[in-house]
Length: 510
Ligand code: NAD
Image (cartoon, rainbow, N blue to C red; front, top):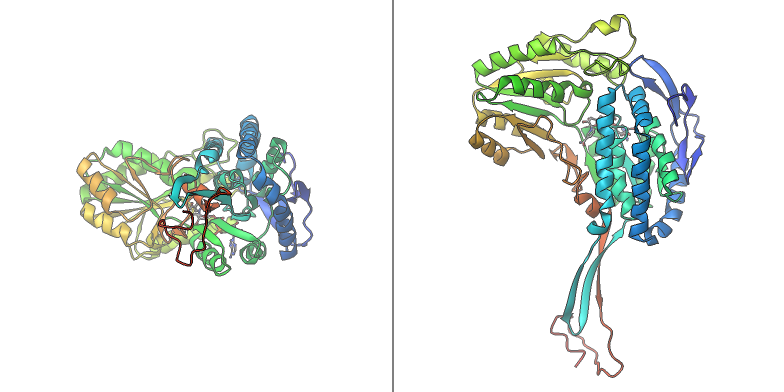
């Protein structure tokens, strides 16, 4: 698919071909930078999902039996194609998500990192072997793919999240069904062509577009073995509960409320620069975006607010076609209205506006879904803007008296995806690392997202289930272990029946 194909009806991708949706239900795909409708995406019926699962199930046995070396060759080719066509894909991402080009390119590179990790699948799949565990028996463990697995993705990483979840699943021998966000289906459909060209057999990579109806079929269908979900916390919890009720392995990654602790000894200039990118980049639509600064000490709070304000007033919001913009629009008009409600709510609850992005100047000339960088101070933990994830550029400052207060405040929050501290004190950093109850932790790092060969995942209500995204844990999530005990007795060996429970003292072979 290319960006030229605008205002059209999209398809699904099943059994290696584009497949027209027959539900008669559609969702509009917007260009958030202009507010225009780009396309309509079909919302699959349960029967269409069942058909997709049937194709995937039929394709699985041959893919499972394909040598790991050959499977990895397909990933190598796919990686190469992605590199060759990354400019085209960048445009597709920007057009339907509103991200800047630089940001979209970064997401593709992160996606490629997860392909690199998947290319190491032969290493990940190595089992364990023990010789002569008893009575001339050797024992070994092997990892087998699960079968048909499903991935349900959010809008904010149209390429990175699908690649992060599916690359390893494919490499270790599963057939994957991806249900992308109905807001950004073009990016996922773009990947279909590349997989096909790379030589992936039909049925191993499926894109089914849809909403709750399609997701429910994936959650309930007995032929789906595992679900990997990425999205908001309420939906993640629903996916986990429903999927596990139907006996599936589920890893459901939810939302985040990610704090940056600013210590009195931090370099405020550097810290403010780090805050800007981590808090407002991608219009704050990242699960690891910094939501707020927790500043230790009144004087530091005052100075940090001043430095930030000055820098925020220089930020530029606009369309991805303008290479000078720092960030673009939010994903929909509805999302824009929700974020403005959060800002208004905070003011009603007693907070104070440092910078007001509710009506940025770009809105005078564009009907895109823009909000400017908003900073709110005098925020307290009982305010809604502190408690709930706000997926847009409304960020805040909370003042505390000590590092311990900052840690307690963050540990009490129900979400625990990412967190970071800015300090020059090794002792403060060490205490923070040890005591903080959050899954991904940074020290003087603005966004502590792990590299592709480390496990990714939050704590508390930011993740449900035990699997991780990226990292070696993914190979474990998408495989099951089989332990084999074998003996090859010689014809001449004298064997007897044993009615005792097998042990390594087994005497059935003399
Ligand atoms: P979302 O929860 O609205 O949607 C995610 C997916 O679930 C989409 O494919 C959507 O179609 C589907 N869905 C939505 N409502 C559903 C329902 N009631 N039943 C079944 N399926 C449903 O999330 P979003 O708005 O697309 O993405 C933003 C959210 O994702 C934010 O909360 C962000 O923090 C989170 N996120 C988390 C991570 C992570 O790694 N933890 C990464 C990226 C995004």
